[in-house]
Image (cartoon, rainbow, N blue to C red; front, side, top):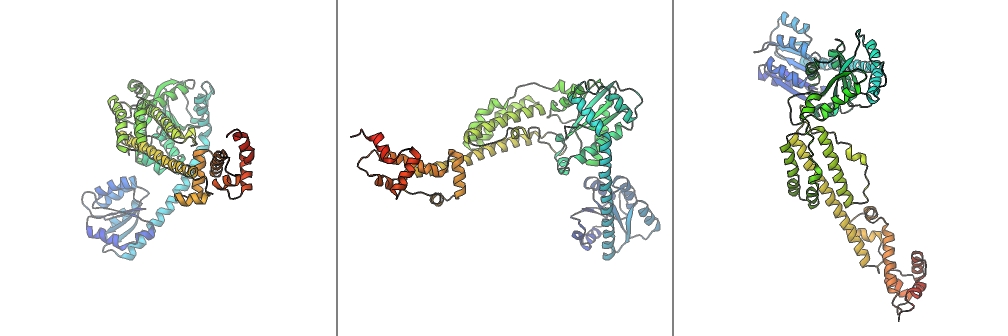
Length: 540
């Protein structure tokens, strides 16, 4: 929780800070303001749950602040601390929701008691607000759910549900026919990082809030309707009846209302007016393209029309693949500066174009992920991966606090991601080099009875790691590889007719001739003697 202390006297603010055991009441952030004007700015941005305020202050006094807070921060609990024992001031504090009125000099026990009361009151009201919100969500989800399902199905299956306009009109109490409508679209994936983090536990509450805010402008005035797009869980649809000439202005008003409540604005894509419901699918696609094809480098609006997107859209082929070879060599070099230089020509071509759309970013992401998969596949042919992983995050953008595209952050993200690939390849090459060293050691010492434990101790690696990586790199078990090396060497030694089978066995690490013969036969389907007779009987 946050608490705001407002007083024009610094020593009073410091006294309040010192007299209260804040942690005991769950308050982890303390804010200060020296007058009402500074306080309102903090209240707007920080939304403190608890407010301590003096009554007599310059610029905006406590009386004016209480009245302002009752309208703009009704959920905040206010404790008045004043040096004036004036009934009119006390009455004003009570009228505008003050929890307590404490006289200076401040009594610590009285102050803590007032805070405990304020925190208890706020907590109880917050729980009740959450309960009502959950109830409203449940009730409002049930009522429009079938409308959302109808409309979503109609978008996905153009021509179906031809009577939907009449059904919608009856449900919303609209008396006039709806021959035409204009569709707007909000995609939550384009929301600012702040709002995505705030609603990270679930987007249902966010969609519910946005739907209600938009319907306050649309539904009650019978000029439109907002609903969720079923099957596209991060999309909100807005229908504007008729030709929707007022749609851009209404979207701005809705966004301003959203900002007051959620402290952020959203991007809206807006299509042309079209026959309803027969052309609703076309209108939806236009709204979608208005978002996908807008110029992300132009940050002057949150409402993006299909007409403007068509005018701005440049179908230029600025392909990542044209620069992929140079970038690949830089990645393989493992040198960050070389990677930066290799990416520079691609970034410069984007700079010169002066146009980037989300659609282009998606295409570049697919090309980039495809190139990465080839680089890493060539480095590790046994690596398994899912194709879905390659496009899973392709629509995520680098957005600033206001929800606009952060071009520099995006370029830095591409650079960092490319360096990460280079690092993974280097790590893999290092691991592969170790496995190659292990294989070489085994081949150079076929006469020794080498065990997994011996290799583990020699190369300072765990047995589990060696077994797993050896199988990944060679598609075979380490024990089988050791056996094959020893049998291969035994075959070469059997060419020397002066060597007895027991001597051959000893030279390839077998102390028991019979055991050697069994292993040899199992691997070659013949005994050492038979192998010698069959392959070397004609040698002099």
